[in-house]
Length: 277
View 1 (cartoon, rainbow, N blue to C red):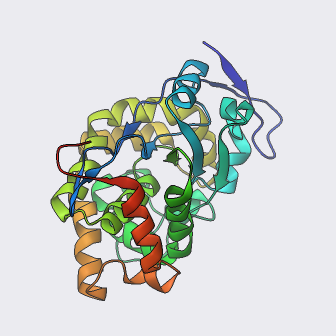
View 2: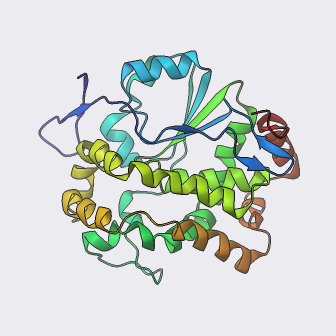
């Protein structure tokens, strides 16, 4: 297996990060939206593409990938950089971090900062409040990412580490802008649950050392999270809270620069008639 030599900040050793096949990579094509379905080959969501193996990178570029939106924090990027994708001149790179650092995810269900035990931090069923804070607090970054999707000459892949939370929020924003209903957005989010175990295994070499900096043990947290299964509720909670607080769920994004023109461009690029995906 090919490995990527990386150095953690302030670390005297260089962990060898394995380059592996992404386990949570999928095209949003075919999802029902107002007026049709999402076109295949426009928007891909993924777990960490910086550690994608060379075969995956070659296949993505051959399939039309022309831009990557990296939602990870600066600390995460410092560990692996862009990986093999950095060698592909056809693919533009956009670093659009949704969190200043992964420690910002460690917030209690009541929205207050605080020290959480690993099981609580990794309990996916409790992430609804975090998603709402992200949607509102990173609205400008979401709009930036949507603009990349709207204007790229080819497919755009967006990813964080697991392809679940930050990626899930951006996928929801894109689908909302395209006119998808709650059921379609939640169904896309829930598909990540099919790969939860493989996701934890794949990200452990990178996220383990980073989480340790904030006092979390990934192995213990992953075991606790996997025991609870995967819940659709966080995405349902996000959509319900946006509707309750704003009426139009896109209001925070509109305040951050999402224009009618950008929405129209997204729909022009990503929408095809029913059954034509």
